[in-house]
Image 1 (cartoon, one colour):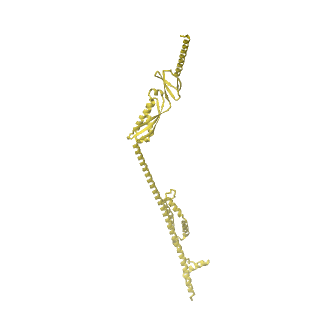
Image 2: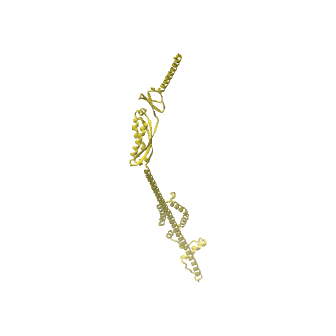
Length: 378
């Protein structure tokens, strides 16, 4: 063999070996370092034996004979598939849920359970069916928080042994069967109709009560007005009677005087010089002449005009005529239109109408009439 050829082949072999050695060094260095992300931890095994947990950052490990298993240390979400269950009152329901878990001990999660996510999901499914089976249908639909709490409580103990913490459980939907849903819809519709009928009946009852109360108050006001009208009419009749009596009194005195004057004229035509006149005629003539002439001639004692005695004047109310006339004028000024408006307001159910009760009206009328009766008795 040519020495030059032999030397060239040897040099090529050395280069190849050097490249292989360099490649081996690079691979060895690459296998000696393990990079761990900030949100996870990794378990390290050497020859299949657990050694330690690798923290976030760069870690040195034995090359070629080491294996690492990552564990996400953040909160993770597990979907629980829809489950079918029979409630305590034999109603079929379906439900699904979401479980929020977090790895608290990566060593236990690696050594104590094969696949912690699958294990937690399966455990949540069986627990969900068991919880729904222990409850009645209405409770499964209304007590969602209670279901969540029961499932979480059932999951806490086994998952603690796996180094997993169940942070929350949320049941998303609980649906009864179609037949049960139809029955529930019919029940809800019937309940709503019942409530509507009750409200309508209550409204009609209240309207009837308000209308009756308004009619009652309106009748009270009308009766009060009629009573006042009758009182005023009676007072007017009494005053008219008094005035007619006084007019008759005056006309009677004038008739007596005129008749007496005619008699005196006839007597004067006679021949006698002595006349005898009745005392009443003399008194009336003197008073009438004084009234006509305005004379200040003193009346003769015992020749007073005919007057009503005190008892008669008090009974007829002659001394209170001015006061009675004033009361009639004030009563005549009563605003009848205002009373009618107030009655209509009460009848229509206006709560703002200031209407007094029948007892108050009667008591007030009795209080007004009591002083008048006392004065008449005095």
